[in-house]
Length: 292
Image (cartoon, rainbow, N blue to C red):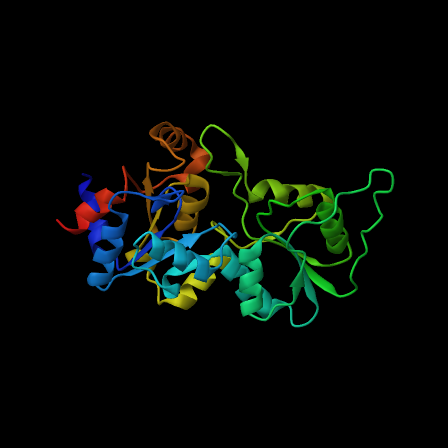
């Protein structure tokens, strides 16, 4: 075990974990994940599960965690749907938000009093009359794009029209793919890219590795970067997030990253932001270090 990594982890008082590929894979816990979180609780350490996935609300994440036996409450969860709701509550004082997304976003926006519409299926475009049924509401101040399994051409037309009419363009995250084994599941980034190309505008992005998620995290606790570690499996979101804000970074090999990719970024000068400080096999190694 790397002695420097061991020394750093033992002085940390705040631990940030990505979820899928770090704490669980789909609905299966990574070995030692429950024991590690319980150890951190017992030893008065702060920990947060921070995820770019916008499909669940904070309460839904707590329910999933508790169902898996994880000692987690709402104060331990930061998801992009919550970041978006907090941000939009301050930014949009009147008017509506057009949402391309799912129920997790709607739940959070409702909780924070943000008026919105667009969740759920939209009717397909009539190829003989593509503008039919694309009526625009008059007071739409923002378009928020998250993961949406109902995404279609009409939603793209509608959202692009609002953006081109002056609505702010926001995105929960830009993850390119979702974990899916041998099948590629396009992620939110694929949908965001469609709006970017269609509108010619760049969105404000809420999730890792961007600043809005870090800002909300800092509201949750008095964070000392020198005593905070980001543990993730994705070099381009988790590790970039930690490096960008001066945190210690640990990449675990239980998710989307393998040693070959780490070797590649270590050899590439332009990939410095994506290089983890330390590489461990899994959260089991972190627990073992802390218990030494």
